[in-house]
Length: 220
Image (spheres, rainbow, N blue to C red):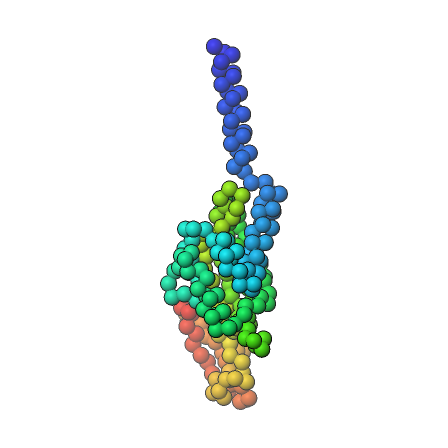
């Protein structure tokens, strides 16, 4: 009887050890997965540039649901190439300018990749303005393959909000602003009355300072 108990405990420990080792992700495996996923993300844009819609479509999971910035509503896999064909139908060609990773998180068979990408849609003369987007893709591993199961994108602001003392502003280039808007920030002051104030001075007008009450409910 005692021998049976010992054998049972030994088998249980062996099974638990095998289960733990199969579920745990080693640092080397995680590093390998990261390289694989970043490679797939770069391949994503290479396929768009080559207009290889078959290879591009193969990156996506059959149950994909995402919300691209160019779409008015979420889309599924059957509409993932719409943003490409709508431009190529006009005779435009896609050109990648820069791919810049931001962060990646892998948890078991699920991964999130975040990055910036800059690209251009160019005409036959090679003309086309660059656009930068923030991209987030959710990847799901099935066997040895990874597929995109979800994602979102948004354009990167050409004039991002800057924050002064916890208050967000969109800064306009002085040369492009009307005269009455050409104000520069002097300092941030707390007068002790429960309100925060921005002290701004009109550009080019000496000793003509305006005290502007800040709306602290609107932050960047």
